[in-house]
Image: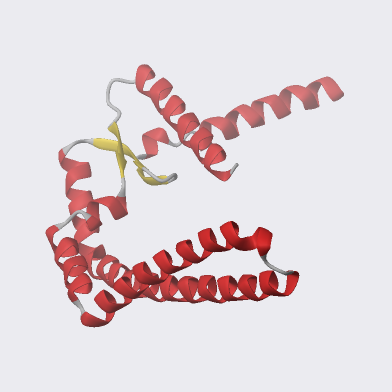
Length: 183
């Protein structure tokens, strides 16, 4: 639902911008940018991710995660195969073992994800000033008037694309018309 709403908002902004573009000869171009995608595709990001993957703690955790995942899958298959011939107590004991394995798997997955997230967040913070400068230079060089975030929202918009004053004027006029009729 939220994604659909975001898509509708972005589409509406683009339609408004396209309509405004048709009315004037000097608006800036419309562009889309995936900030995280741009930063994570850099050589620096690739080096950091490679470095993280090479850390013994992370590498060991990844291998353990894969091992636990295979063990869990095998245990689930075995339980499904044997459940019909197991007593209720045996089934319950097996379910508890499966829940424990699943819990361990989830815990390790969260730990690995947190380690990765720390590296990526640090990278985003470090690159933010360079990113802002690069985007600003490209906006100017490419004459971009409206820059949309690929994940929804607006990153940059020239005043040309702001129709707020026009809407205010239209509301004022419609209010004046209705107040005249009310008298």
